Length: 125
Image (cartoon, rainbow, N blue to C red; front, top):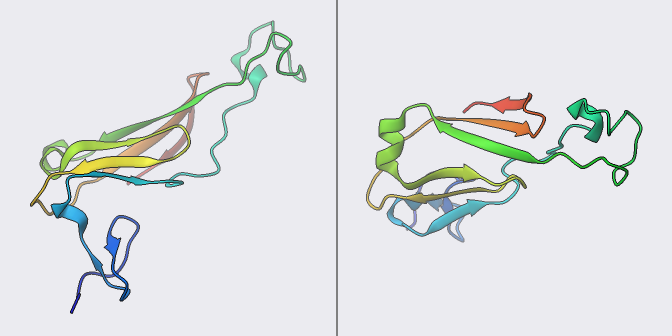
């Protein structure tokens, strides 16, 4: 009988509704839409004269891009649990590789910024 832990987004579920922790699997794990509703600031947010408020993209204005920074709050523990530390792509996909045979927990802070450089969103852990 598969008597694993209750299902969570980062466990592998069996067909019985129970889950087993994926700690023994060193393959690349990913979770699409781990972060969602992601928006960058307006093109005019950069404060440049070439993009006054209300100006359309394509007339000297460009869309801003976003990026996530993922930081382990307990780096020593995280370094033991993850063969490749978690990272998040601009579309909100979380990806990581676990270290085989390890179990435990690690906390992370995730910060989203657009290329204006101002803090947009923070989520912890």
